[in-house]
Length: 82
Image (tube, rainbow, N blue to C red):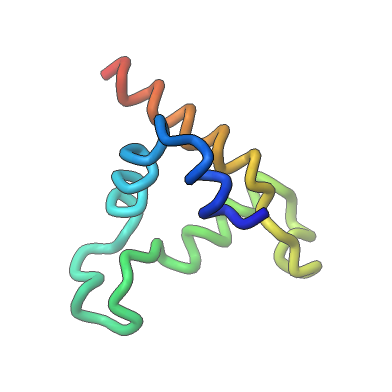
């Protein structure tokens, strides 16, 4: 199952997902190709290695969609506390 489909199945996380995309995007992302609000590659590599271990990138691993839903749920709950 794709990550987008996993998030689409949880409407309560839609706003959180969009806000996280823009929180993680570097400033001025619209000025540089591919003109998408993608987080920096080195940041994503760091996050994936700390989540799944060092062999994740070497093995071409895939992100578990349940982990993304859990992360967004955590973000939503954290934001509500603030």
